[in-house]
Amino acid sequence: MKKLLSVLLACIMVFSLASCNSSSKETTADKKDGDLIVVGYAQVGAESDWRTANTVSFQSTFVEENGYKLIFDDAQQKQENQIKAIRNFIQQDVDYIVLAPVVETGWETVLGEAKEAGIPVILSDRMIEVSDDSLYTCWVGGNFKKEGEDAVAWLAEYLEKEGRADEDINIVTLQGTIGSSAQVGRTDGVDGKLSEHPKWHMLDKQTGEFTQSKGQEVMESFLKSYDDIDVVIAENDNMAFGAIDAIKAAGKDPGKDIIIVSFDAVKAAFESMIAGDMNVSVECNPLHGPRVAEIIQKLEKGEKVDKIQYVDEGVFPADTAADLIDTRKY
Ligand code: GZL
Figure 1 (tube, rainbow, N blue to C red):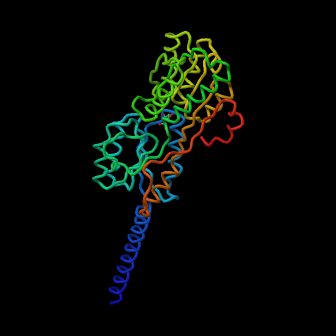
Figure 2 (figure 1 turned 90 degrees about the vertical axis):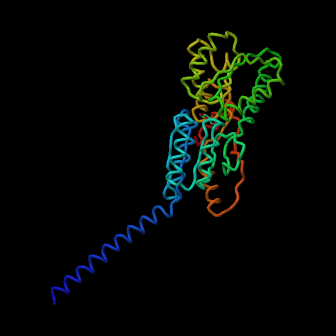
Figure 3 (figure 1 turned 120 degrees about the vertical axis):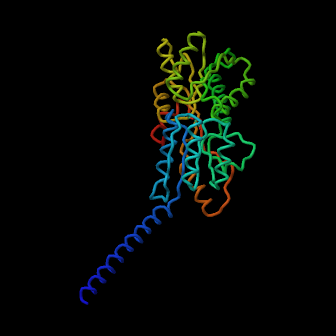
C-alpha cells in the first residue's frame, strides 16, 4: 500500500512540476510574444551616412524594453529584395510593416497582399506612387522638393554676396537613385527654380546612386567633359564627398573654385564644411524611429494618424558648421 502511495505521490509531483514548467513556459512564451509589438522593417540598404543614421534610429527605438520585436531587412538598394522582405513579414504575420521604398513605383501588388493580410504599412523616408493610398497607413519623411528649392535660394544668396549675381554660372548635378522620391523631389525643386536664374546653366545631370564611389566616378567624367564648372549640386552628402575627392585630384579647390551644394547634413558634411571643401548642406532628418513608434502607439490605441508627416529640417551653410557640429545627432 505504502509503495502505491509513494508512486502516486511521485506521479503527482512530476505532473505538477511539468504543468508548472509548461505553464511557466506558456507564460514566458505568451509574455514574450503576446506583449511585444512585432515590426518588420524593409530598409533600402546601407548606401550612405544618412541611411546608417536612419537604420540606427529604428534599431535603437524598436527594442524589447520598449515593447517591440524588430525584424530588420537590408535590401542592398534592390526593390526585388524589399518585395521579398515584405512577403516574408506577411508570412510571419508581423503586427506592422515599415517600408523605406527604394523607388516610388512597383508597390501595388505586394502592398495589396499586406492589406489582404490586415497588416498596416507605414512608409518611412521615401514615398510611393500608388492609385490607392489605402495601401499605406501614413508616411514620415523629408520634404524633398522644398529641400531642392531651399538649395537654389541659398545659392542665389551666396552668389549675390560673392558679387557674382550677374555672372554666367555653370552647374552639374549628381542625382540620387533615379526614381527615388528623394531624387525626384530634389531635382524637381532645383529645376523648378532654375527658370528664375536665366544666367544659370545646367550643363549635365547623372546619377551617383547616393554613394560616394559612384559620385566620385561621375564627377571625374564631368571634369573631363566640362572645364568651366562653377557649381556641383550633389543630391546627398556622400556623393558630394566623392565629388570633392575628384575635384581635388583634378587640381581644383572644392568650396572655392567649384561651389559644393549638398543634401542630408550628416556630421561628416559639417566636418567637410569646416575644412572648407563644402559650401552648404540642406538637411534631411533621418531620425524617424521615435516618430514611427509614436504612430504605432497611436494605432495600437485605435487613434487616427495624419497620412503625411514631414520631419523638421533646415539649411546649414559652411559658416555655421563650427558652431553647430557638436549639436548634431547624426
Ligand atoms: C532621403 C534619403 C536619401 C538620402 C541619401 O530621405 O532617401 O537616401 O538623401 C540616402 O543619403 O541614400
